[in-house]
Image (cartoon, rainbow, N blue to C red; front, side):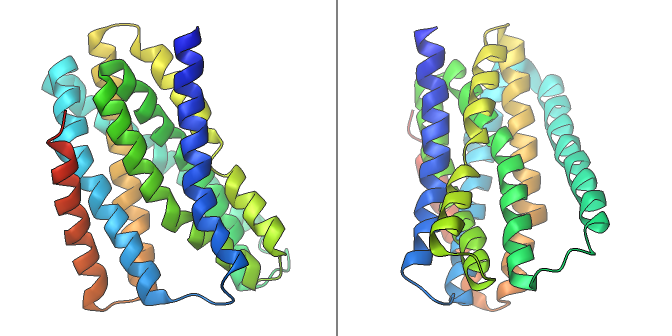
Length: 246
């Protein structure tokens, strides 16, 4: 029980630290550098892609085999697709609500990030069940990944009319679901070695979809130059370096 509590708190605190650091920008900036934010988003995308491909998936295959790993990845992708569909339907119903475009974008971003922080927490919990080193690596990578997301949430809400304190608080709270995901991942990871593999693969699929269907797309919307691509490549290289340490 003490172990589960520690792992859960690790996920909860790391999730809130990552988005919280990004959210602090509302107290220091009145605008946003789109080139820089695009670079950071692409860097975190590359970092997560490398860790998933070179660390998370090999661990999943080692525990559950290739068939269960592929099934877990597919389930992770489908779960996020289903969540997106539900969110899109709800957003269409709320079009009548009058909000500035920036404020609405920030609110929707915070909801989306809160939802996808759950599978990231799931990865941390299952990662700790696989090995302490994998859990630590995933925690560090996800914290880094959450910082630009915190910026992407907080700044639009601030520019859209929210106070700095309110924008920061909402950004901070969006990291909380990671604690629940971590607890669930750790509990399910105790069932069997095969189940650890499935849990890791599920988290990998969810994270890959979020990276390539959301992060990179949002980055390209901000800036289409060469800098973001360099950020992606740099992130991949850093992710490979991180992944070789056990």
